[in-house]
Image 1: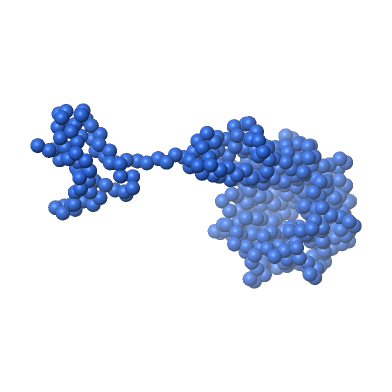
Image 2: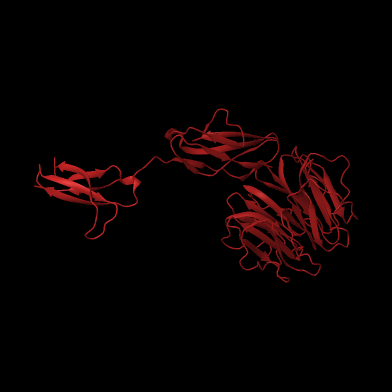
Length: 430
């Protein structure tokens, strides 16, 4: 597999593990019950698999998408303007986005409900609420990530603790005592998984298929995913070396990692299938900017993958020593204007190049006021100015005295750029 391509394994009854031909340039993936969703670098979405509820019928013209999530029979997309679009089954209102919802930074699609995280750290949920999975706990704030299971919802707080609500028939919302230092969460059918800052994994809830029995000695984990269907479940972990580990139900081969799979940048768990994205993948491109003479700018890239290295370029030529995710430029001259980009490479093989960030030089431009005089060459004028004109009481001040060297002749006021407005008159001198 090459950079930005998708690999899937497990149940393929609806073609969910048959990757669309030519699919590339993918930056994010999500697995639904029987379908998958991919986000491309150009902000468009591709979905495949079961479509009896329209869950893979991406709305025409959808663009500017920054995140995706697949539920049981519906799909959700987050746009760059902070709004949400959803499609597919809507028997519980799971695709009816609340009116006026904005400022969203993350989304999660559950069984028959949808969850959104806002930039202020609060959570909004809609759809099926039979198990109070959309009844957000009162006062919940400081949330940094969300996950949605079949009938439960999970939130990660900025202090590294976890909150969960909804169905708890299998203990999926019973947070282990003292759990802290969590950096990521995932929700399966009836179980929940958490990644800690030390690279270890904790899981709880339904364990009939061993989906919460974390493999002994598992460490160096950078991302997690959870899947499951019909009271089954499996869990997936991505390691820092780009390899994948999976455990739990394997009735459809969903935990049988393809031989030789490496260089993985992201993972997702579906019903009875699993999906992986081959890296490196750029998730935030450097942004175009302008700079003044002698000024400075900072360009940054965010990428995921294994053993990443960076090489910045200016107009396609490598910049010596520019090998960090951030490029700081100081004491800039006009010659430093141009197209900057960064090549991100993985130790597992493969590389990808960012979009161009155009640096534009803006000089110290000033616009001057003045007046044009006409008349016989040698004619003398006194040019006056005033910042305020009042009939009969204007305090005109002398700007200059001119003897026309030619006609017409342009008189410039060198002090005008510092004024918001200025008036002029020319008085012939006998």
